[in-house]
Image 1 (tube, rainbow, N blue to C red):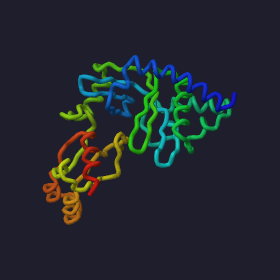
Image 2: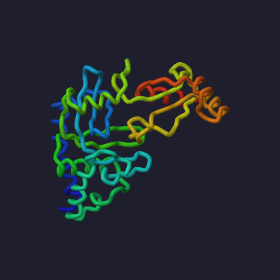
Image 3: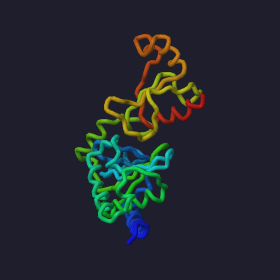
Image 4: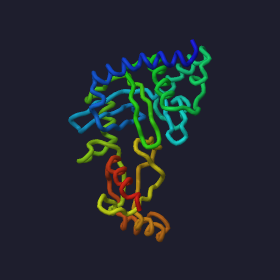
Length: 250
């Protein structure tokens, strides 16, 4: 069987299983998501009383900018412990001489990505698939289990998060006192960000307005005076990207 036939067959099999998975656990019911790569834990939620925790294995990512696929085992920036499990897909590709399962990254389209996810699902075995859609990436996750809210992983997950009145638990972010959703004031960042991105250890989402940037430059960076003007405050990741979208119009 050639690759196209094999991939098409696995996609059709996945469609049936995926519908059952989504219906059983109400996957489409949840409006928001967040995940912890180190714990390999995905949280789907509407609020703190309406949520679902899922254990996952990373399959791969699709870059919307370059239109390329990257298998998780090839991604040096991925910190998920189980990403090397996906090498079983590569081994299968070598056995069958399916190049798309062997190469680490290459041009692809979104239909290709679902084929890769379906093949990974078949080889690695799981409950279903979930695609996290960010501004720059689509992240394909093989769901391997439902996790209790009382589990040690969920406790660790929540300890890393901040409580937001609007969005519930989410990753921490830091912004100056001037940024709001009333009048755009510019949006300067410590580094380029997008929602859901993995952060290196020691990095945080951090931003400030145009006036803060002027003061920061006047004082040769962040110091007692520039920090006093900025009065950096703690917010959640969801709030951070709402502020980014609104204030970046300047």
